[in-house]
Length: 377
Image (cartoon, rainbow, N blue to C red; front, side, top):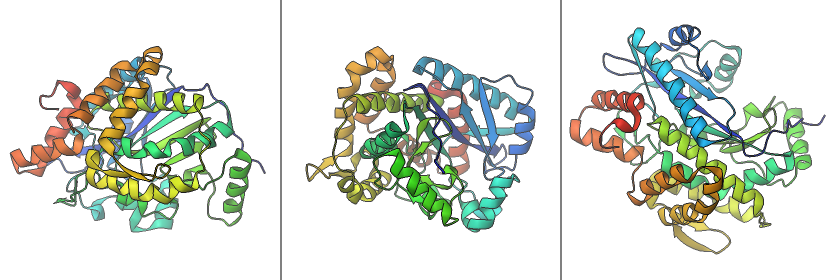
């Protein structure tokens, strides 16, 4: 049976953001998602807010957008609505890829059919999946374009990791990684990347085989870093930590949109196998060292500095960004790269100053609320 692909308007885009629900006593995670979602039913928000796998998480889904400006305006409105609702419940919300000191054993699965099924299958891994990511959807004109773009974006995954990295602490400890969140994702057996199929027909055969084994029931069962999303007509980049600000989340989406536009226009016919021979190593480097990662170029057979590669890519995309209305967000990302500035750096600096993880998370919640108004970010 063919896997139906719903074609969408090319290069439209949207985001999903998983965010922390916190108490306002010691800023640990709170089991407040159900109460917060109930209150938000009364709010008129330009997007959807949904539960996530544990009761200490909620997920923002934007509408489909054509421009960065409309996405940013929409995300700010949703954020403000959530913050107001949280205030009335004496809760707080925050971005970031992982809570610095929560204990996974204290989490509770949100009781939806799918989440309970995941918990029954994966056991304690489901509670350890209380980590927070940004997913970026980009519309494509055909299922073959979705397959092509999933592979074509793979070399740029380290860029998104370094820019969004905001989980240097886990279980109360400094991890030495810019993002510790991705270790929780990698524990799932269907994590990683799409197999090296090159057409939608080949992918459909692969999917049917996996479904025939009883391993998957839908695309949701693949926890890949990038995956086609046939029911939306998009590709979905799933690698980012949730940024500490709404503004950075929108900038990352603009980068994905601009990059996808270039890759679709200037198609390369490179074989995908060499890319995936170095993919895991490059991913690790970006998680561990952020902007200073040493990446392997499988076609040139040389090492490149992530920060330099990112800046060169952003510079290459600038002319295209003018027509797309993405010049401002791409320049903002370039400034972060030049300054070697991401959420992991900010969190480490806050901890060095306060020596208190609850104070760090309190500041994290303030940063989410106020965005770029907070000094020092």
